[in-house]
Length: 278
Image (cartoon, rainbow, N blue to C red; front, side, top):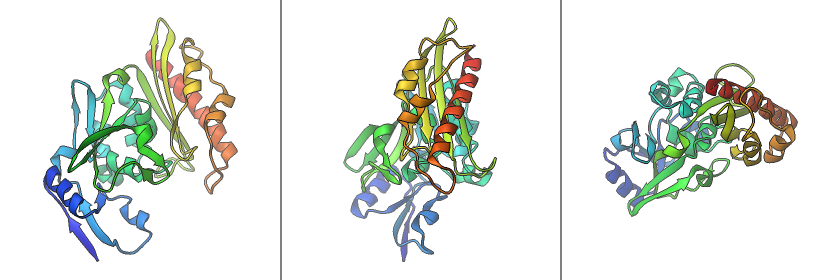
């Protein structure tokens, strides 16, 4: 039997979670498939009535996105070009019905290797905010996602927000994904790029690849090699991309195909980002 909780304040939610660890629901698009059962056992806490967890705001430190902000809200928001990749990803998370109720925090906590929201957030050095009844802490997204379906969230914590520092809000970004069909698809590979430029040359690069490793990855060596390259002719090494990834064979694609796809998607995304900067 399932006990259903729907607190109206964050403090009430944290106190209840401290007293009785519960399964957290933030949109609910994945909660039933994840159980692989006809019923939900134990307590479920619905976070969607907590105003503190929704909305996008500009702070002195950067952009704050509440964990229960829906994909539709993200796609429709007025955000900087550096967050264009995140908005592009938001329009490709399932269909319209999923985007209307699915949340960015739920996407991160679900921690699927193919989670569309993670590569664009890695490209802007995103940090997650975690709250408990005893305090708040922040973790880099790279430290929060530990593996497939595994995060660093403690049982008494709620992911409250995603924080994007001002230092990562420069430049232009792009998101591309590849699946077996055009819509409603789990990615075979996906990439997010963010570049800055000056005097026709790339001055900084952030490249992230998802669905090609146990967790989405930044490609530091490939990023470094792009710095100083001309906007009109950027190149990347397929070998360097492959060295950063460790994909597996599954029903959707082979590991070799994923490595090839990731390289090609990166080339296309980098070219499109450079055109936006030119």
